[in-house]
Amino acid sequence: MSAASIDHRTIFAIYASSQSWTAVHLGQFIGMVIITFGLVALFLHSMCVVLIVRALTPARSASSSCVSRACSRCRRSSLPSRDII
Image (cartoon, rainbow, N blue to C red):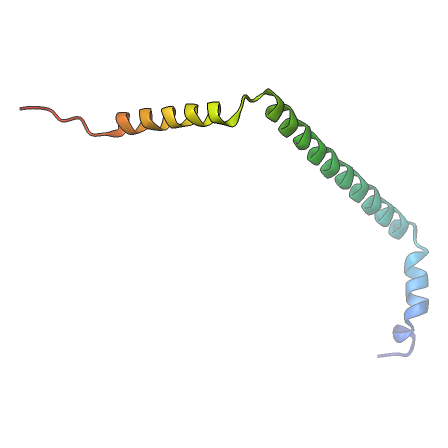
């Protein structure tokens, strides 16, 4: 191994001065900004949907009775029918 290959500052200076290095890292930065804004927008949209659904949903007692009726219908329909032979 030569002494020139161990000179990290010089190697990095050559590497960082190339235009492809600058373009790649600029692209990475722009990509991360887009992903971050997308995740923030998705979070805010989901919070708005939750708030709208909560505002439009009637009281919990009415919705829970609706759920219990639906569950009892499912149980009745899943019971095996008994044929009399």
